[in-house]
Length: 141
Image (cartoon, rainbow, N blue to C red; front, side, top):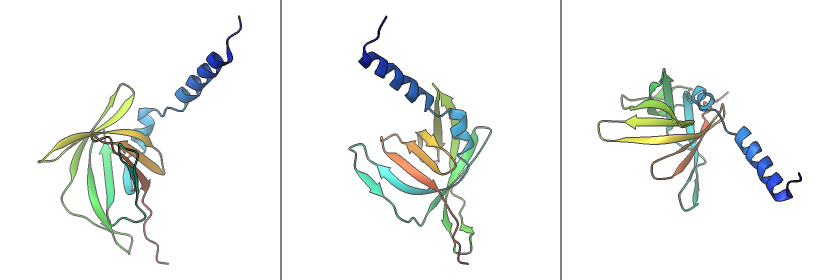
C-alpha cells in the first residue's frame, strides 16, 4: 500500500516534533540559578528586547518547593538582595512543567516552555512569553 506524499510528510513531521519535546523533569533540572530577561513576546506578536537589565531573577527550587527573588548584580560579582521573595510550587501536569507563584498579595501560574543551561522560556497568565538567559557575573579583570 502506497501512502500519498502529504500523509507521509505529516507523519514524519509529527514524529520529529514529538522527539523535540523536552521532558518536564529535564526542564526542572535547569531552573535553579540566576536568570536575566532578554525579551518578552506579547500576545499580538510584538517583541520587546532587553539589552541590559538592572535586576536578575534568582530561582531556587528543592523537592518541588522554592522561591524567586529579584536581585541586583554588583560589580564585584556579588548581589544586593532583600527579603522579598515569591514562593514557588512546581507541578508537572499533562507532561507540562508549571510554576505556581504566591505572595501575600497575589497568586499566579507560569508554564515553562523551555529550560536548559543557557535559556529559560515561560508563558504567563496574560499569554506573554518571557525569555531569559543565564546571567553571567560581571568580570572587571
